[in-house]
Image (tube, rainbow, N blue to C red; front, side):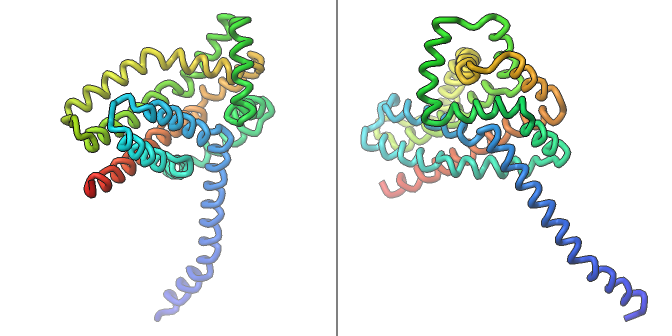
Length: 276
């Protein structure tokens, strides 16, 4: 080995430990920021509630499947769309779409006093106490309807975060998977891919006509006790590039999580179909 090569090897191997340490630190920071963001915006709780609401509807067997088969199908649905699985898929998407500069800005925004008020209120909304409090807030809103200014503010928040679109997409993915599962398990009827997509399109149109109002009502209840100025400060962040990154990444993570869960669900249906 020449003197130059020996010197180069010495430099490379001498720097290697520091390079590895630097990479480990970057990975830890990325993972930490990702988890902090997902936890702060209560994304896991939101997805779990969406899946639970859908499960509750189709647990009633609106498609008319044999009751024992419907129970079996919905048990498989529950396993595929469980909270932990959805969260893991959300985390994977955030890691893939990670942008250090934007993520740092989001974390800084999360930890501001104004944002903390909103985020704590949102997190409480999904707790047992928060679920009970929803009834009180709904009653108060019925007695004293919100002003047009308040409604406009809530509508702005919903649009900035793509809340309605994300929820529609998640429900459409679940609906398509359940109709496909029904077609496989039913002894009475089976559907072609074209028929299934026709059902799905009708379902999407139906949801689209009501989802904006549903989301607006949900947010009015969620943030009932927060004043307009706090919400304005919170919403303004979504006009920034980091805010837009957060919105886009959140939307894509929801889509990916439900797509993945639907695939697992249909795979499990295929297995029981093969031994039926």
